[in-house]
Image (cartoon, rainbow, N blue to C red):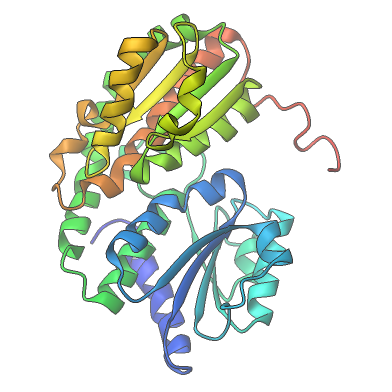
Length: 333
């Protein structure tokens, strides 16, 4: 069985039993902040694409606390993610519990307040362990959420693609292992080329948008202190493309699957009017080896660690460590 699926099934067995006693599940809401919220995006994308019966949403933790959706109640599954215990995410769990929802905490530590405040919890790998052990590439918060989504579809939708999804999880480590090695020299070249850029756009579509969000807010802005705008490839042509010129640094994350034509359209425009852009294509890193019926749902699981590899190389050349922060963990805010 796919690594981590035993734990996912065990937790969902418990949650399902509780939900069945009150009439079953009606909605699934993912709640978190920053990169943890982004990590649920592929799971939300999968559920919205494949489910015909479940309401699916994602909320920033503070917004969930202060503007709790009216639908959250006894037939709700609320999944909150925080590696340790982001205060507003822990509070969101308390709010969901009080509303009668069934809650699952995704955390990096079993003794974290996130795990202990939730009714049920799952622990994920969180320290880039997949760089040394590619078999863990789908055992992070993103992969764990995606496994939950796939299992929910199996249980509640009799999902015909489930076996293909599990096969893809099994294939992913070898694909990522090769991709990681292929990216090493390319990441150094990327760092050398873009070391002086302080304004970026990151484009992506479909499930890959998780990576655009994480790259912009976490890797570039938080970890490198440079301005960066995440932009959906389809939305690019409705405003953002007017800022494009031959000097603007643009990172286009080109996924596989149904939304790839959106990325290709952006690429054509950049080739004509840009000049300082970089294309990171999931197909060139092996993701097209997966079954086309499910490959698109894995875009971010490959591209997210690859872009961190690229931006970490950039950080080394800039002599600006990825661990550096101006404000985070230093002040009350």
